[in-house]
Image (cartoon, rainbow, N blue to C red):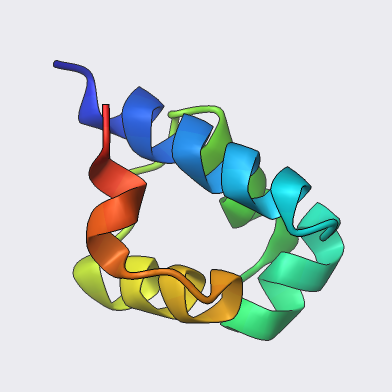
Length: 68
């Protein structure tokens, strides 16, 4: 499985469903905008800490980011 692509697709899907821009999510999760873009494209490998901050900003449980 390509976990980076799965996580990235889930972050993007949930972000769009919540009506957030990448800029808003990056700000709320306290990460760089270009780093978030890399995560959403499956090109960055975020730490557990960053995944937790993204999940918190999206108001989801972290395991939801790993659903296939």
